[in-house]
Length: 129
Image (tube, rainbow, N blue to C red):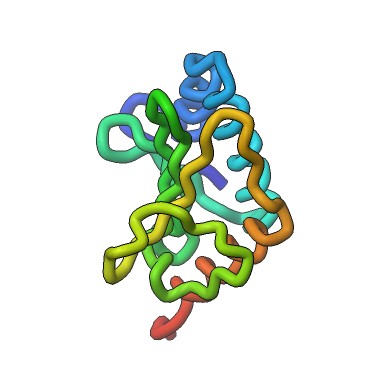
């Protein structure tokens, strides 16, 4: 399922971002996006805040940003998620968010990432009827 922005489907905007990066950052963002869809088949893709890919289900799960040196996935409720594989390596001081920064050549533990995404879905479902 795909959310829409005013100027086109969010999924197309994310496709465009991956293509326009045209380097390791695009490859990394594309690989992470595929893992998100594997973990959460009914995830909603959104395009917010002037060009930030967002994945949601029952609320925002994570955002995907690209910078010169890192691809950053920020989990809105990351501080409340168990992270036994130690994937979170950025924004560790906040009360709510946690992030995964990947640099060129770095790979994420796919099984641990899928489990983390599923935990984020479960966290969004807590307290809702």
